Length: 190
Image (cartoon, rainbow, N blue to C red; front, side, top):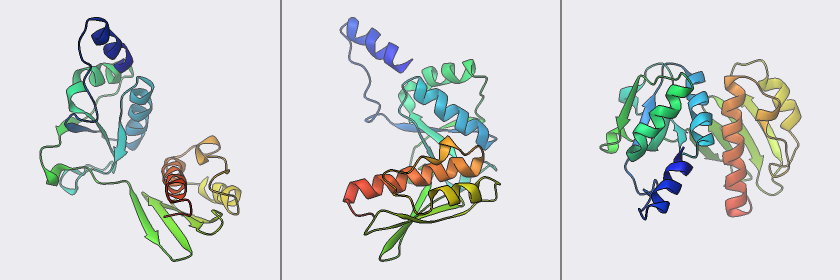
């Protein structure tokens, strides 16, 4: 939908909105599964969205929110309506106390670095890029995913989403991608 709007504006000589320069807002959902579905639907429609943690004052039981360019709220809501997703609220980020927080925590252990997303953690050896540990969560597929990933290179390992099917594997996917990004960014890890 965003691609269509941008194309339409360009054809008529208008300037499409720059989502990176726009004020941000975030969508609060009742359940984590709704956050995951909303993220996928909005990304498929071309929106620049991210999953983050809500500010402490707005936690509702679901510990994730979807951030989006506030100027695109009407278009975002149309996509969500088609998917039968109804956020509890859409909140503009109007100050530092309402800023969503990173879903990730990174810990430096000298020769290793660990990325945590929600309650799932992945630890990578700096010198080799080898995954040395996967832990956390309480879902049944995490031990299996840990056995598959441990010993693999963060660069070449299969993403957890390929074989995972739970909220924990979703969080592990996020931690995995962040660890890979950090590895690529600095060449030798975080």
